[in-house]
Image (cartoon, rainbow, N blue to C red; front, top):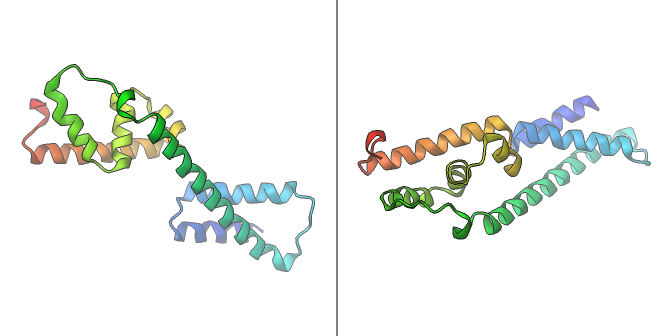
Length: 156
């Protein structure tokens, strides 16, 4: 069964699932297997594990996507954003708004909403290291855009 579990993790990773999520899904399948009252014949175990793992990941993906939609709809609206008194920084908010959704959310949560790395990780169901890396990449994208428009760290 451990061999099957490793196979499924590799299969899910090959399908684009992050390693941590793939391992979580397979662990959930093992727990489901241990808690179940039915017995699965050995020759059908591998197929059952694949089937349940794929369905479990799809359910998790849909749930996470639904949560993100709720967050975007209810928490990332114009009314909930901090209002910066200085009009000198309107250009910054405009440039943040032009970024891809993932980058915009990261920067908004961290800088404008005041969330900590841990809080962002909890809200988005990411690891803290993933939040840190994504935040760094989002900053880099914003910095590059701003530098192309003539803004530099000293004059912002």
